Length: 140
Image 1 (cartoon, rainbow, N blue to C red):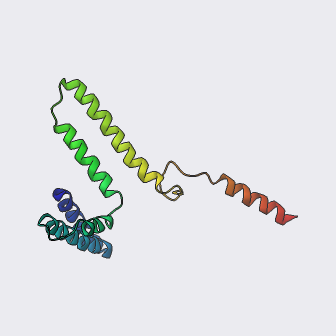
Image 2: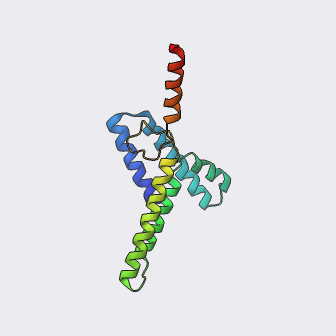
Image 3: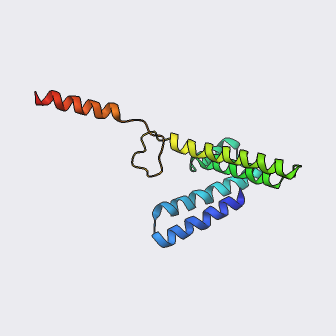
């Protein structure tokens, strides 16, 4: 978790320097605030509900992605015998977890027609049919 926060901090600092984006500076400030809250929580000087409130303000997919990453790393580092079976199971679990993260992102916005990578979108055919019917009615 701490390595992730450090890596995110470096990336946001780079974006802030190159793009001069105020959003990156806001995110950096939020990460500093969250890291400080986390440290205070470890010392029992911060309540869990307050820490979770800070966590909720982060990217909504961050928790799922970090959990997936930790599970995958844990599975890779675990010793399961025989090796070929462990390779198969780690591969299948990794595929399913990554697939679920991508599916959650895609299904979160069912009207993502403007997004290049969106695949599972709600059909706009009823809307097209309505426009066509109303156009025909207005010409009469």
